[in-house]
Length: 305
Image 1 (tube, one colour):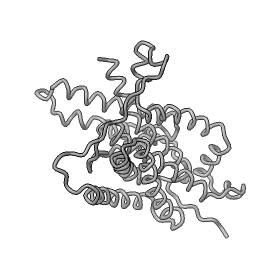
Image 2 (cartoon, helix red, strand yellow; image 1 turned 180 degrees about the vertical axis):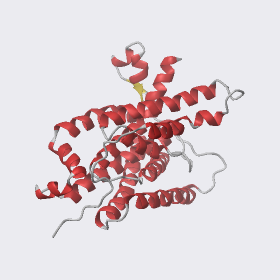
Image 3 (cartoon, one colour; image 1 turned 60 degrees about the vertical axis):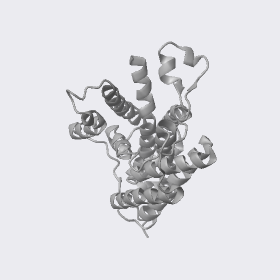
């Protein structure tokens, strides 16, 4: 039972981990990608449609990435080039995507009499590692997106602290003027991280539709994009903090599902367990007393002269 619970924790933390790591990079460059909820949602829709129509999961993931990239590009254009308010722009795009996905779903499939489904990504046991008692079933019997998240963690932490690009991203969020003086295009840096966040957010959204549930609904994301957004600052804008935060929220969601299966509704309402991750977000946010916020977070950069 414990192994099953911990395995589900890893599964449910996967999209939060991918999305929050991408958000860390974006925010350390000064860009608050508040369109993350919409990017997750359109990624879920694009992933499902691509998989359903082609019969190939990889095509679904590719379409999800493209959809996420498009929304991120629109967000970047409005906030970087036109220098509009990042929170307002992201909120508007989230509302737009919610309506757009519902509309496109109706255009593509009409009103089906039965829910449209696909076979969720199968779990793959890694040879040798998957045979380790306990750990093998928890970490090395997951789907391809979860394995991708393992690789992403290693690469993201290494690049963040050990490469010139990581230094540039961190400097752009603290002192973009100095970055500009050094001959580095601030807008290009911010475009790079925002578009990357769109690609990764699309994968995160696709996880819910084709990696976990095998279907798409209008409320499939249910605020989890905002949870990934919250994990970014609760983790103090560090990739390692995003990993830990994602595991905590994954545990909360897995625990909620576990208690629901026990049939404890007579003592506690089922809705309470569903709300656990969101209650945890509020509690942790209120409990934090200090944040190492990037100095230029959310502030458009205007080149002098």
